[in-house]
Image (tube, rainbow, N blue to C red; front, side):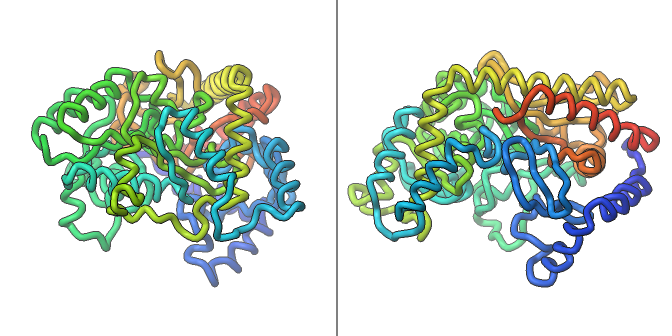
Length: 466
């Protein structure tokens, strides 16, 4: 296996960052005394310590040390209009001033209005709101198992559907003993449950046919992303999603599209429509919330009915204290309405900036002697994309067409993409996470030029070690 030793470089970058951001470091020292590892979301607890944000607006952050940082993480890829867009914040401010926004514990007109918009834009018959994508996908699987009376769940290797029992298998790549994406990612789950999760391969319709042929009428559902996120930022092929729809129909299983990332990213609505695929259930989150915590499960009325009175409440999709929170739904209603009204302007602009970002970063790194390949492109179905993820294959012509390639340390330099580049760019006042991110409508051509210059300077730090 090819490896590069970044021990010295990482130590050098960590020391430079400690000097660069002493106030963030001080906050971290305080945080680790009362929080696990100093925070509440493991992915964001970067080494040697995370950036502590004091303010955010548009494309930019300001940290505790006063640095202005060009941000491509954008709220965990949720902020398609940039941080704190006025189209949303002005409505929230007015609502809070007038006495609407904080928790009431009652239903209101806003829930019906927001659900109607979501259903209209996605083709769903019914929707129910919750507070996270994790819960939305979990409820989708519960409903599918109850509706079909079956146990098996098929998911994609590298696919992340949140931290719940049926989603915590086949997420990370484990090269040891050839396990690849077949490993359970956490202790504490019974094997009787994880044995019911079958891990298939993304964009491999033949493998999917084989899986359905093998497990047949034991399959409750197939859950898949139209644009895979954690698995490498790749769009599904039209053939793959249409094969999934055909097979689930044929075998009487449910098709669940996890649209937490793809929903409202490529159009004002779901991405499944662009593939000519209507799922039985679809999970939404991130962008639809307008910067507030909201998610939804939407789909067929007869399946969703199992959570309601007509279905005898067989599935306890009962929400939670903050499900359909007034401020969150107001933000979602505002943001979805804005995207629908401005679809012809927003999405071509995002696609243009996304392509510019991928090309600019690629040219900057390659010109400085670091070979890189980017995913996140659009496809024949998704005509343009605002997203990007950098991969560093050891061989320039190595095939990179599935999650197994991106995260295999014998194929790609995963230390460079998951540790080194992020920290080197942060020292240049640019933020991305695990070498991936997205542009927003708040980014400009000048910001993309700044990104390219930052990549060049970062590459000069790195190339002596690569």
